[in-house]
Image (cartoon, rainbow, N blue to C red; front, side, top):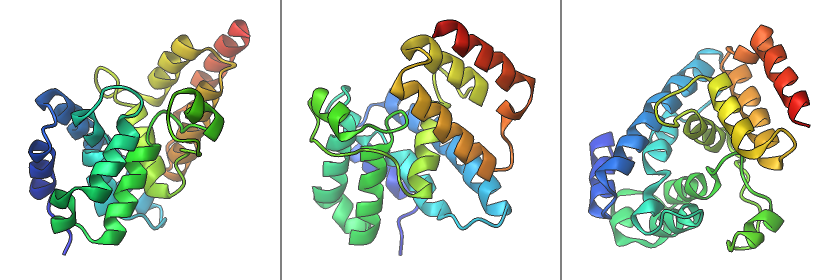
Amino acid sequence: MRPSREEILALLQGVGLSAEVIKHCLKVERKALEIAERIASNGISVDIWLVQAGALLHDVGRSRSHRLDHGVLGAQLVRESPLFSIFLSQGDRESLALICERHIGGGLSAEEAEALGLPRRDFFPVSLEEKIVSHADNLVLNGIVTLEESRRAFLRRFGAQSAVYKRVFRLGEEIERMAGRFEGDNDSREDLQEQESGQG
């Protein structure tokens, strides 16, 4: 039997995750569940429990580090800590570990990972559940923001030509289309493209 939401929250406290980071994870959970439920209502198969658990656990590595390596450290915790093996099957542990590893931005290539001091391998979200959590995390900045607001924030931070910005853009478009609500289909997308061309 899979652990309840309350048991997962207890795990976060058990590994020493700060109240501030847990608050962030709760916001990501809310957004990820909203997206997953819209996707499921469109007849697409999605593991709702895995999305919820992954959203709650995606930043568990911040109990060890607040740098980019928190994803890798979180995956290590999920895979190896006795706290997690008590509650989670091996299959669920691995699925959740991959969500932790792959949630940063729109993912990282092996070359980017190595340059940042991470293990040399791709960290792109692959499964639908990984993509939903990564996208939801990108929509939780100081609070929960719209897709367009998230894009504008990544555009300002990285520039329109950066691989990071382009991956976040593509991931958001893919997930929002599956959810049946792509905000960029209308004038807002044209405005954003004008901004991008102005930055090139």
